[in-house]
Image (tube, rainbow, N blue to C red; front, side, top):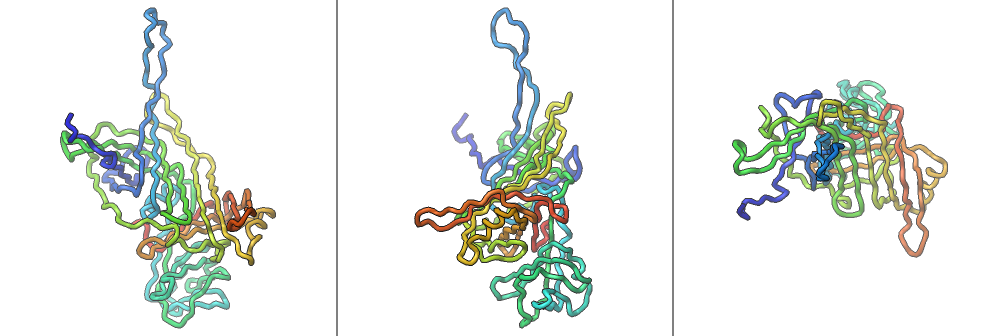
Length: 400
């Protein structure tokens, strides 16, 4: 083998396509390469050893017992992750509402957003979601509001304390889409592509697996660098052969800059109001707790089952003299609260992750030396009044 025939690991491609039903890829699957920093979909073969008596004392036979499939894709946060959140949260985004050309009125006394033109379109939003309002040249360019209720088709009740913009200029647009964790399993088709000069067509071998599910999604941000995360998949069934699937197509990869932890992460929201509390770092770990159980007589095929959702994480906040005991008091008194981590992506796209009903399981205040005071908290999320654990809001059409 010539040294010129070697390949690098970054030449192995991983692409993922949505899969409508269990058992087979879509008739015309549309693949896209996820934003990942490592990982491929891996197959692990397990064996058992024959118990035969060997007069020769030589090693006993090894028999293939089963095949297991799993993957972890570390990533840097871009809008690309929204493509897989429906599979991760076992649910679907609400239809994207983009209402334009309205005559919006903001009432800071009544805490309402209303449509003076009475077009009846504000009734398409729902209670419990965030709505996003572009305000042009002001900073920030887009404001966001938490909808407590829909009063009527022309009026939204906004959470008291949300910073309402003035009516000094005409505001015409409002948008939003929301995803809440659910219990309807969704599938993905995953494809590893290995470059091979001697491949008969397409210049690659295509290793395809169907029926993969998302086991967990995690996010982590600190004071510098990119916001990172991990998308973990489990299960899957091999498609025979190494050929390209019929009618499969690819979407172009994104060229979007990842979110900077220090540059484009908004202030955290507590109980659906933006706070001035500083944040040192935070994590979210959302798990579906999927078990892939082998099926008798079906090597490489698994029965999937889910445990209860778990959603935990950490939040290291920087208290001020006006709220030094805020987080410790929540912990001491087991106060339920909501936590929203809002991310501002490239192109004024916004992605809000909200744990709607949290409790602190521990809060520690460092009080040594001359260090910056930190509240180091770990939290656990619970089911809320809407029957969900984690909610994601976006100001763009995530299905596009």
